[in-house]
Length: 440
Image (cartoon, rainbow, N blue to C red):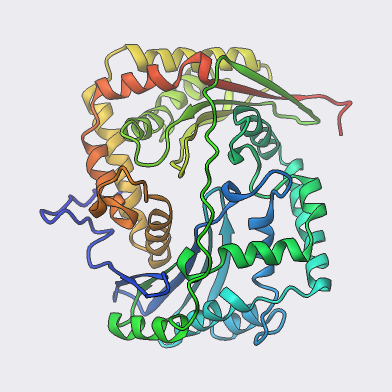
């Protein structure tokens, strides 16, 4: 593993140095970063809409819309986006999550502008032919049902739905089956018109191009589009959890699974940095605490890991495990609590703390070697890290630098304080996936 690159005196890391942010009059944001190590360009467009923005009874629309964006426009026929990409030796795809939807292309640097032409077309001209809509609905329903066959996905859905009573993080990004079955073309078109507009989008370009020419081309293709309506604010705040919740999911499964989830703060919260370090101490690598306890000492699980992903609104810090035959969910759960208590109360060796912080930085630095990874990082933070509490110079993609700086400053006392504050029994939701041969 290569060593992380230190922050420079100008406050920019290797991730953000030479990134240029441009705003068009219609609200479209453009991030450009020239990287000339390889003749490749990654082109992405990010929309600030995900399952977080979906109303009760209308879940899954963000993900469904992502599928429809490949079904053609007034200019490009069905399948033509993928065909053009393939003919020119590129690749493309898209993803939807809680807070965003993003589309990406990678092309050789002599033909990458086609990605811009496609995105500039489908941002406002996507077709919603009824026959294509109904056909794609069946594809998504099958995808959703396949997810319900996935033991961890099934358990995660139930735990998130139990932990969040009011906030839309309650619902899976793919949506609930009845909502997807009931969505209409008119629903989807209204959703598209609300969210897929220049003022709600960020174009990200990383790779082998000339910045001025790239910005000129984006302006030619997107600059004439109206800004679109102001996106509605999401005002739902999840009330505090007042005691442990538990959920049991029954399924035919040879491997029982466990998920313990705690409410955790939103992106850029002052406590978020110490929680990231805690997740690394728990489960990154063979020397991590869960690996040493559960896989080496107890030999009770095939895998166990902790995860904390920052989102626009407060989300979850969770631990998952796959239980080995001959061991019980309850025993593994108790062992995890003992490790949580140990981390919260016993001194953390300085070398272990430093290693966890280096591992976080290394993950970002190593990801920086690929232009698509760079574009993804820049786009995600530009989309999610816009809290008004952040100084202007730290918002959007610049939050990457603030995040790395503050993570380096995390102390043992801070890790132990956030462990006691957030990983408290009253704040947790415990999910068991148990084998039940009677279930199907």
